[in-house]
Length: 451
Ligand code: PMP
Image (cartoon, rainbow, N blue to C red; front, side, top):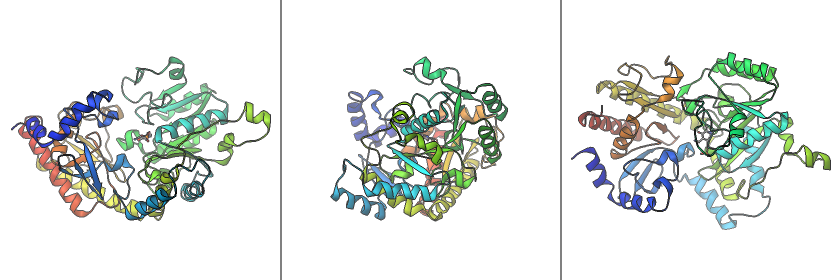
């Protein structure tokens, strides 16, 4: 049986659902990254670090709710908090104590969080941070780096993939595109821009590097960027949707000891539910405050949202932040990730496959296959990779969906086929079985001639 035939027979109920989905959901999937040919498995249940599809297949979950489930599925403390809140109401249509509780936790943990404003997703958080930066500075442009991902809002999506001068998506008006400056990963370019253009409100970036660290950045880069932005009165905005509460309890800003003016959060903040927030300096966040009539009408920044800090999400978020507050969970996840990375790299070496898996903290990036620019049989962990960022950004090219399918077939669940999220509850057995599944997927691809 070919790989395709095996896939078809293993996931036959999923195929039927896919046929139905394509008649009602554009592209059949609800997120670009969940699209998978010939079709994705449909998941019905998840517990701890495992999940099961409609055909009864089991997966080791290295997607972990796109990185939102730091404590795995169904952690008892989070379930208990959610169930208690469900009994009290799912939308209280007003202010509630849990919003204060959650904001106080963020304030306690995150260095820049003098004030906290809630939204419902990472995309909303970066959009809000951008509006706050513009409102506070009275400037209109936003600068961002090539390849850095900040969700799908019009202002942040540009410059994600090459060629960087070609819009990433249709449907974004030219006026919006003109208000966003795409920068190369070059501090001189940042300096030149801020020197020559006084209309730049802020620089937004992923502090761990583009695509959750797929193109790693050094701390020295952040130190200089902090300095340059301060010098020119532009705000430094960290997109901590991935790094927040993961790199350290206080996020990348604690991990690298660099405090931005504003930071966007989501994922872990929601404890598995939709949530997001912007945290920042009190003086900057003051654009949201009510004051006199003239200020309110002419200077104040408006913000609303029916589901902002929904009480169920807030209950889950509070429980989650309590579980990750002392840094032990982050340490456990990082150790598990290191073991996984080391084991997979050894397997790649055994199989004589070029490239490697690598990653900072508790995210794993996969970089293997025939289109891979690395000509070495895996001998490094990728962390000190000297490849050109443009090449790293290209990723695995046409090989990625093939690897993804093969990993799915072997019960290794990974976001988009190239990014793994490791939680604090992945056990030694999960890691061991994960390494074996990855190797089996690679062996299949060698046998099919794809590798
Ligand atoms: N910023 C970063 C760095 C992200 O990785 C993501 C999503 N993975 C977002 C923003 C958007 O978050 P959401 O999917 O919650 O809109």
